[in-house]
Image 1 (tube, one colour):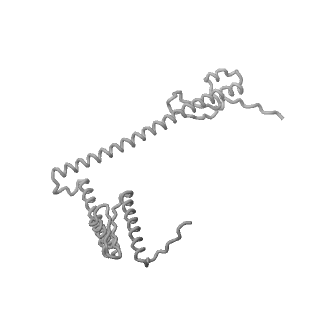
Image 2 (image 1 turned 90 degrees about the horizontal axis):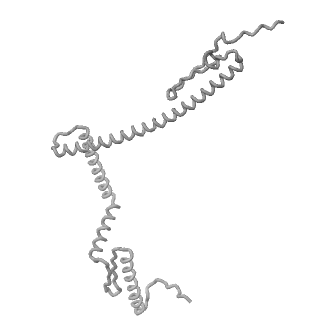
Image 3 (image 1 turned 120 degrees about the horizontal axis):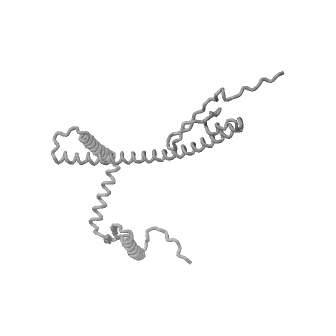
Length: 233
């Protein structure tokens, strides 16, 4: 059977109390030493027996542990003190205000203002900052222009390809138009195929492949159509 649960209360028997104290004290010190080694913690343990005897353990120095404890305790109390917290925020606001003033002064100097009182060394540093800023701006500008040129080149290539496709379609339409004209008017106007006679509807196309294509629809000439004979009643 397992051991029963021990009730945590004062041991009345002095002998048993002393034996339990020795065992548990040794176990507590062992755990403290293991905690310091395993977790790289700073551990300080102080034990007073019922007779007033002192037992202690520290992996560094008991004095440094106590000083660190007192300092941390004071800081913790100050943080929870409303007046101390107010002073802390006021000091933080003053630091931020000073940083803002320094940034504003630096900005005015970069703009060429409030240069009075600056020596040669300060002016040289300011000039170097401006040159570095200009180099960064020019580099960014050149990159943007290169990207825009590449995009325009890509769009130009697409437009050129579409232009070629449209040119092919217009040539196909011209050929179909010539065939329809020949079927409609017969072979008596053989010159129509050769382009000497105007089609009723025709497209005017630029012959330059790389030039923009211009499409123009012309109205049929009245003389190209024969007036049908009136049907007698």
